[in-house]
Image (cartoon, rainbow, N blue to C red; front, side):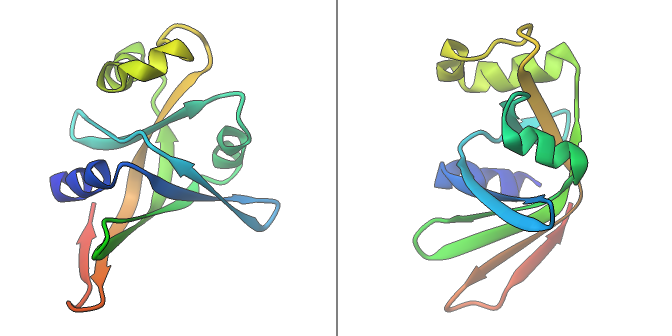
Length: 130
């Protein structure tokens, strides 16, 4: 999992696909965190993607470092503990201008049942089950 985290962190921006009424929705994200051995993302409860993930937790993210890309597919599970929200915001202090761990809006979710596939044009794909 650390390899997956390090790659996403290095890329900075990744694109998260959710499902809304049977249609794919993709948007850029920039938060990734390792907490208690799990891989987390962050969003706001008021956003459409939060509603979409609550209705259908199956997501896929994709990021590219210029030579290699990663596709991470799995389910997202909300962790409503203050400690998890605080850990994420401590990793991304710039988000504190919009969020805090006690605002009722900050949401953190972790991957479960996930598969990561690293690909490039020069190497065979590498799959990691998380």
